[in-house]
Length: 261
Image (cartoon, rainbow, N blue to C red; front, side, top):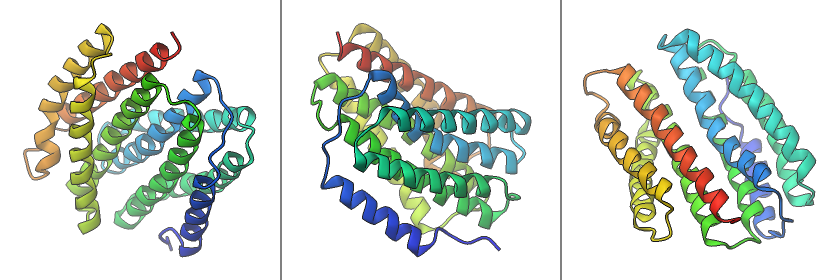
């Protein structure tokens, strides 16, 4: 029988994050390694969304291939992060990520249902919290403006995947009060951050064009996320959310490049 994330696991994560937050002195790393930590955040949510697609028989063949590719990417990124990051606090977090990733993979292999889907969503959020903290530590000693903008843009990609995950769950009747609150809070955070990025005077022209595309795509899908009882158009939602993530990923890369120029 499946179990939710154990109280002991939650205690370990809370303790680890609190300890690391009080010892944030990570050494600088390359942009490629930093981008991998950001990608890990996205992958925690994208793989959960793939699981939902497979279970609901939406683009099932493509989702299976995508899940396999993304899990392999997560393992690759984790190995690179382990090799590149030397400070003990971050390495402790990566140790916990290894443990949690095994649990996450096991949950992704369970037959789809309300209980197993809830477990997958929970596990994906635990991994997200870990990589949130890893990325935060990597950025702690570099306060350049464009690096902070990179962090904001990367968080937008994470939010899009996370909103999509909760949307699919709610469409299939897998919902509770907390998940409804989370999708609403993610939408508010996405729109607030989108406005801040649009107002940024230092935006390169390529970023401004990308944000215009994000605005267009967001208008297409926003209504679906706010009202899950609307007509079901999975192709529109899937295509638009994938394009949204691709646009935000390009914007994040532009910021990362700009902060080193």
